[in-house]
Amino acid sequence: MLTKKQWAHCLAEMDRMFPDAHCELVHDNPFELTIATLLSAQCTDVLVNKVTKTLFQKYKKPEDYLAVPLEELQQDIRSIGLYRNKAKNIQALCERLLVEYGGEIPASREALVTLPGVGRKTANVVLSVAFDVPALAVDTHVERVSKRLGLCRWKDSVLEVEETIMKKTPMDKWSKTHHQLIFFGRYHCKAQNPGCPTCPLLGDCREGQKRLKKGLVKEA
DNA sequence: CTCCCGATAT
DNA sequence: ATATCAGGAG
Image (tube, rainbow, N blue to C red; front, side, top):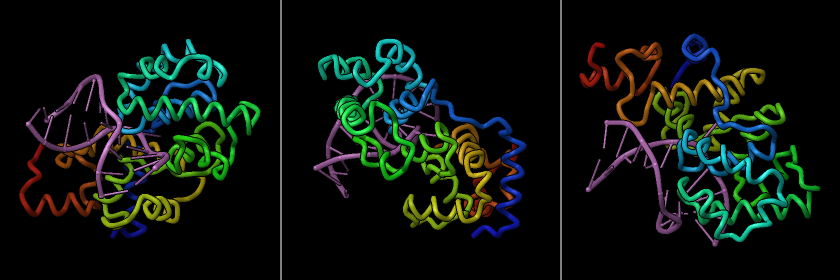
């Protein structure tokens, strides 16, 4: 497992690698961010942004998503994948927003996770990005990077990963660290062919050291 | 645990 | 051909 000193070094290096890490889901308000994050499940944010560019011109408010047949909304987001579940969740979400929350996205995790299609990860994204509430969303990148580094255990659940990172990171850096871990996972420590040969974190990385001993890390 | 699912990279 | 992508629900 990473020591405190090693994690501090990782944070410093990621600061150098990705000083402007940020949310790459294009949005103008909490409602749009919630829709975009819901759509982003098992899909690249590039594809999500391509769809929401036109989607957010057609649908501005919850009422707009409920004014069309389900099949029409499905077609509008078809290229995203998982489009039947997502379209159904969006309409159910909008219905609940109008009935329970005056058409606005609630700013508490307890309320957010009760919304259709919104789990803990999406709730944490909305909380931290839209409402500036301390939270740390663990997505596929954050989970993979944390486990490769040895920041947490391989067997940890996403909730355990979240708790571990929060415990080991100052609260005022949760949001920045969250986005830096995503950028690091997306652009450097990729799922396929991780960039170990040029990685500034190789010396601290559990998986990287293992690969090094196996001769899998060739010099750049 | 399985299912949902199209687009893209490898 | 196969793996992966800002997951969530049953």
